[in-house]
Amino acid sequence: MAKNEDIDVIAGDWMSEANMTLRGSDKREKLGSGTLVGKAYEPYFLEKLDPAIPWLAKRGVKIAVNAGASDVQGLAEAVRGLIKKHGVDLKVAYVDGDDVTDAVLELYKKGEKFLNLPANKNIQEWGYEPLCAQCYLGDTGIAACFEGGADIVVCGRFADASVTVGAAMWWHGQKREIHVQELAGVLMIGHIIECSTYATGGYYSGFKHLGDQDTDMGYPIAAVDEKGHAVITMEKGKHGLVTPATIASQLLYEIQGDLYYNSDATASISDIRLEAVRKNAVKVSGVKGFPPPPTTKVGITAKGGWQAEFHFFLTGLDIEEKAKMIERQTKATIGEHLEKFSCLNFTIAGAVPDDPQSQDEATVDLRIFAQSRDPDILSASSIIDSDRGSFARFCIENLLQGYPGSTMAPDMRQAIGRQFFEYWVSLFPQTFVKETAHLHDGRVIDIPSPSLTQEFPREQPDQPSTASPVDLSRFGPTPRAPLGYITLGRSGDESSNANLGLFVRHEDEWDLLRSVLSTETLRKLLGKDDAGRQIDRCEMPNIRAVHFLLKDHLDRGFNATSGYDSLGKNLCEYVRAKQVDIPNKFLEREGCEVVIIVKAMSKY
Image 1 (cartoon, rainbow, N blue to C red):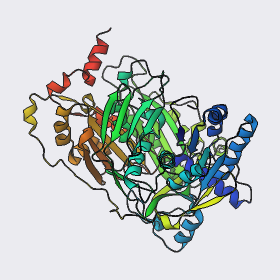
Image 2 (image 1 turned 135 degrees about the vertical axis):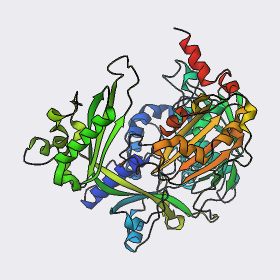
Image 3 (image 1 turned 60 degrees about the vertical axis):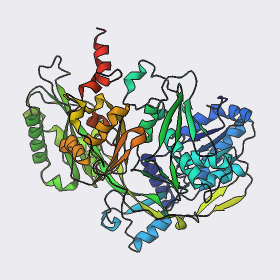
Image 4 (image 1 turned 90 degrees about the vertical axis):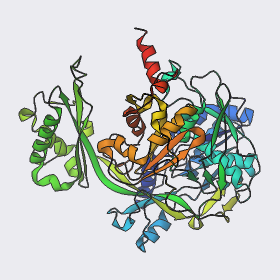
């Protein structure tokens, strides 16, 4: 990327809930033991930065990244070491203040509720002791570093899109209290490009349109103007696509509804527009801007305990009965130790088709997933010590009296417990944040909280069904077919919330989608997975999309979940596979997924 003549600034998002908990807890434990923090940042960034340094210096390309995780200063020093090795002159600055552990712990001890975002639960009833906390910061500190002469700006838990917004704020000389509309537009540009190739064909429901051009997808490039609009393209000579469909897919990823919050601006995206201006180039506009909320998101980590899993392979007939037999036998063997497990789930993955054509086709996986606060019951030593009970031994001991064909997975490593963390997402007052920019020349700039904010309802606007549904009989014959034959989409997670966005590519299909896809219909499509919890719905007519936020749909967050879909990414593909009434005229249309399948089959 540093060699690319189209690039002025490289924006890198390295943070997730997974590494927030791991790096934050590691830092806290080392501080508690009196040792140096040491490398509580993302070292992979250094691996990628090293060969780019000569080109950054040669071309004057800037970098803003949030790879600092829980040791921003440490990463800045490591970057300076690499620069010195290359013998070039690049100035490094860093921004901190996202670690709010001390403030959160003090408020927690005073009884602060820190109501969590998925379910409005009180943290005092969580059952876990907070260990560390990081809040999501904004863009102003990054812009201040660039204004101060920095070439590389390193941050910690800055919001995913903030590295892009901060760079654009500096480039266009904008201020958060003055350029609210412009910054809101860039906020959504940052959201679209933050996951790199997710915008250029990665994780794309229409992936078959890529053909075999999918092994080296290009990174997205956003040309951002002073109005907050942008044209998104991609690296030349690379695989992938930039179309309204690939951009809409990423736009719908991990959003919570119409309003998208940041520490420096709020974006309303219900009227967003995506326009193909040429091949692999899409203009993004139509975002409405509002001031930021007075709060920012905060992630609070606690030690959850230990977890492990064991797998059996089940083949052929009577899969459900075989799984129930395993569960009965395993629980009977566990006996009095059962109370030591906070979670013990038996889950079948897959289904045997009628008249399977191979043994592999007739085989499914049974996963036994366990969590406990007692490390001994999940330890490796207890597996070989016959006098001690252990999860793995409990699973193995019934093999000789097990189901027909009893076969376990040969690799026992997953059956040995590993530590996991619970994660609590809430809101934190921006006025409590002590954000500081540390420039290359030793200057330190305090970044004040925004003076212009706006209160928003805790819940996003909800539209359970469309305002003006159409009579579906007007579309003609409507056989049953998978929803994904005419829709594309994307899903993701935010803590235990899951989001799902589905859209159609043709204007005449929009009336069908918005009329059919109500909250009630989604619950039916979810089937057994509908837990009856809150679901918020909204529409984005300009991109022909319906979006759902499924509150507390996942089992906790990524680090603690007992489910297969730990990040909510497969929710969309599950719903797209469910059957609904779809008009023949849409199924017969060129470009429809069913047409692509038929064409592919015709080759053989």
